[in-house]
Image (cartoon, rainbow, N blue to C red; front, side):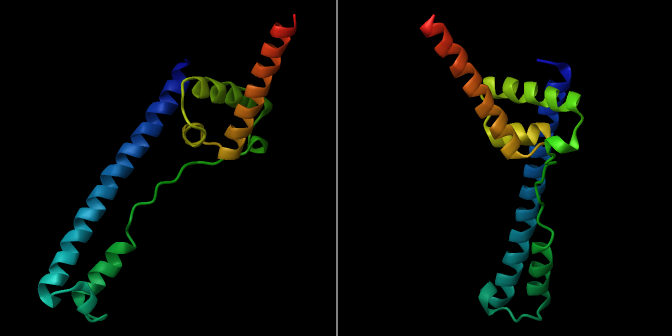
Length: 134
């Protein structure tokens, strides 16, 4: 596997790791706010909409981390880059990565990764059928 592809995989894993840490921190902080609200009002449901405790919860909810990845199409790439991406899709597929993960690692649309895998499978099946008939 190329060093660049290994770097893409490590970058993907780092994005996931960082998101998980941020998400855990978000929920830990939200839990503290909920507990403070419950301490004062016995239930979040009983807190007045204009209470500082409820407002802090509402504000915190807008800070939830969002996990997103690039999602390029073949039309966004040169022919050379598109050919390289197709090879990388097949390499990752053969290593057992699911389609969505391949798309995230390579920064492409999941449908593009899926079509590339299907085309690869058809090619393999065609080659194998030719060997059987020979």
